[in-house]
Image (cartoon, rainbow, N blue to C red; front, side, top):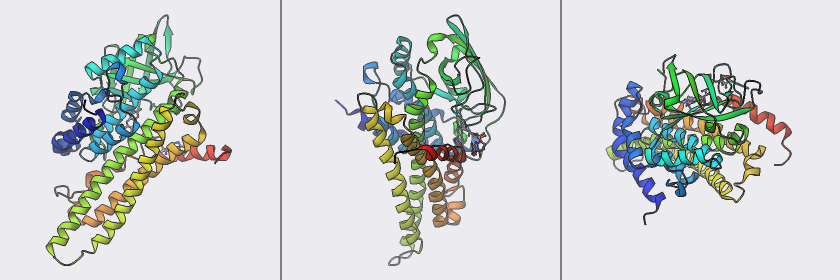
Length: 389
Ligand SMILES: Cc1cc2nc3c(=O)[nH]c(=O)nc-3n(C[C@H](O)[C@H](O)[C@H](O)COP(=O)(O)OP(=O)(O)OC[C@H]3O[C@@H](n4cnc5c(N)ncnc54)[C@H](O)[C@@H]3O)c2cc1C
């Protein structure tokens, strides 16, 4: 029997090279959804890569998902980020919803139909503070109503379902939140702004006014506070960082081919840029070690019989996750800028084989995807009270 991990990575590598890469320029230029690559991922049943095997899914873990994101991002950052964001939503349901027949059935359907799930945490009035909501779930018998003024919904117009944060009830505090799965038949999205951005243009993430209603079984019974610390934050920060690692790897690979080209043009000499290449390749190695180390630690914790719940919800773990996000988002831009300096004008041109522009534009989104200062502020408060090392 084929090893699902090996077959998934080789499928992602093929899709990256043959489908995502040739479409990435038009995805970026036209700010269009990477339809071809996402359809190819569906055809390989990779949208259910994290669904447990007993429900028919791929049963992959954090390390493999991280590898898939890294591979895809080397070819098309938007494809990789859409894939990563979808897997984060699947993980929240798979790790916190399996006590419910509804969510079990949903994941079984997702395996068959390869639904794409988008995330709706950001909201007008709270920005990127995921642990605060203005909107609330309004219960009406065994049904609910939920409206949200969402500032950013990546691939909102292309998703089959949405996973939305909201206050548990109209009388609940802003941080007393639920996570609700909405199905396309039961929600409407009114786009009220554009997505004409510097980078990550293919994620197609404009603001929307969301209106929905549904049956109460669509509300995860576990409080969002627990889902966020145990799953949404670790999966987000590790899979985003994996996408950023793929972008950095692609930039360094272009810098390497540029330096080799220079070396070939003057045989017997070492181009001066080779020193800078050696330097940036060391920085990339540190970035890779950080991402892989945290992904491995997380996978080990999640595989424990109690799913590592105590550690996952601890302050020291939250700090580690936040440090990964902030560090990788910063070093990504540093690496890409150094690659630009190595490639010089050839890197600055949009039509050259070693063009670095899109990597830089895409990479600049990393620090904003939940603002780094917001994360530093959270870390600062935790460090003031953290007792253990
Ligand atoms: C490519 C991309 C895709 C995205 N996709 C989605 C998606 O699918 N779904 C979704 O819900 N969201 C999505 N987002 C939104 C994202 O997760 C953040 O919510 C959003 O980028 C934050 O918006 P903002 O910059 O207005 O931040 P805000 O959080 O409003 O912050 C504005 C500024 O204030 C600073 N700031 C805020 N609070 C503090 C503080 N306490 N201390 C210090 N400084 C602070 C921030 O650092 C930032 O500089 C996406 C973002 C990007 C870039």
